[in-house]
Structures are given as C-alpha cells and as structure tokens.
Amino acid sequence: MALQSYYDFASGKGFSVRLGSTKNILDKESGQKILVMKRLLCSKQGSPSLILSPSDGTRRKNGVSRCGCMANIKFKRIDRSDKWVTNTVNHDHNHPFTTLSKIRYLPINRSIYETFKVLFSFLAEVNVPVSK
Ligand SMILES: [Zn+2]
Image (cartoon, rainbow, N blue to C red; front, side, top):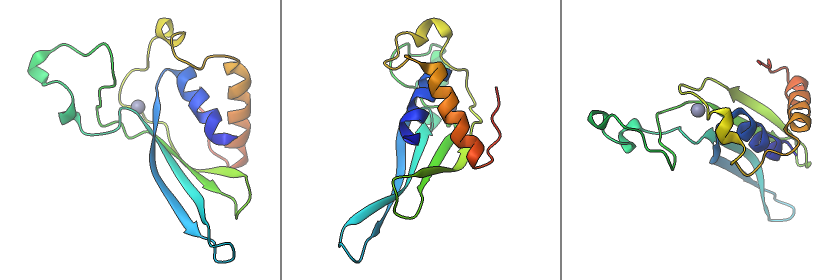
C-alpha cells in the first residue's frame, strides 16, 4: 500500500510525517463515504511561532518542532478501487533530517531497502522524479 510505503520511506530518510487533509466523496449507490484523497505532511510543517522563541537559541531535543516545512505528498484513489497513486509530491524540506544515529530509534526501519524499491516503483508509475 502506497501510504504505508511513504511512512516507511519517511522514517528511512529521517523525517516524520503526519496526516494532513483528506477528502471524501459520497457514493450514491451505497450511501457510504469513500476516502478519495489523503495528504501527508512533513511533521515540521506548520507555523514557526509554535516553537521556542529564537532568543532561546536552544532546540528541543524531544518532540517535533515545526519550522514551516512545506514538504508533502498527496495520494489519490483511482476511481473507487483500492489502488492509490501519488498526485503531488513535494520533497523540499527546509530543515536537516534526523541523523543516522537516531534512525534506529524510529519505529519502522525494517527492510527499508525493499520499501524504497516499492515506493520508487510507484513514483515511477506517475512520472515523479526520484532524487537520491
Ligand atoms: Zn520537512
């Protein structure tokens, strides 16, 4: 599943994501809501005013500090199938990633290499350039 792959990809790269906006449509036949769009944001997305004042000079070691990072990825469901495609990808993080020594403390780091291959294959499907 593409979404899970992106979570794995993010923890492999050293940043974390959080769920952003979603969009549902109402299926007239079944009367059920169908999730058709999901956006994942870098966890540092948000207003810089939420973090410590600049005069402090120190950065919080734990927890997520936001710095207005605009990186995000948008997934779209193909028709009403279980297939999702990446619709918009923005990998422009405005902050350094977690250092390698910290990555092993992140919850998901198993078979990251396999995950990358999966992720890259679905990115390739929608012609999204994959940078190293
Ligand atoms: Zn970021």
